[in-house]
Length: 301
Image (cartoon, rainbow, N blue to C red; front, side, top):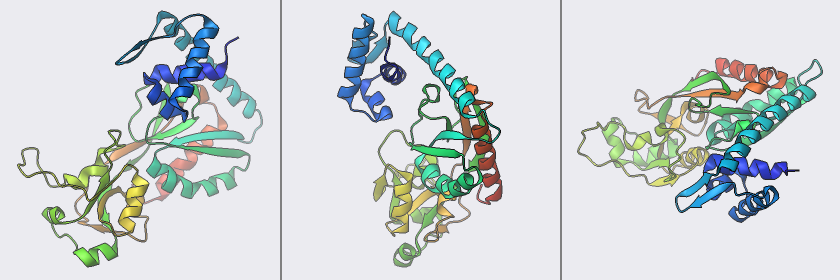
């Protein structure tokens, strides 16, 4: 009999295309991932991947297992939802994936009210700026900052997020408040780190604001780069510089004020996403409706 934990690791590797990326997604070491795949291949008596310098390619047997693993995961999700919600009241455990900014600030602020309203539901937060695999139950639902492309996911538009530039009063007192977009050239700026997986382009918009495509001027350089939007928020609050932040972060901070208020950065849309097999789940539906209610009550969208 196949070990489901090993199959789950196999699925993550197949989706990621490498042991390294799968290890990051699962929170395991690369050597642990390699051992799990090796043990699974030994159990089955067949290789599941062709190993190349450029990455991993599924063998024919690997393709068969990947399809079967995806189907089993969907069936398990349906059974778990049915077993956990056989009573009238929404109940059970809900694993929620969200980006660092939305999850650690906006969502956490509203969770106490949700859990008080539905005391038989428990929640785990999976905070990551990268997408987790909902089909393999790495989370039940997700708040994504880009429209999902997987065909088996149900998506509901949650909110359109606007972006402005924010700084602390202490910073502005020392360095002056910019009056025009060109004044940003002379300020200390905070941007998202060098990680290529920046969640949304607007986090680095402060470096390009006011620049046209044919502008000969060099782009502004960041005084500080942080590969985490919550870290950018804290850096701006500490007076390290000006940052382009989503309004749900910047406007909710008592330690920041908006600068160049008429200068708006790129907006992005967040979506509430969950697998089709959870479409009848009571805990998912009440959580979705609760989030939509909180969005409607907040004026920053």
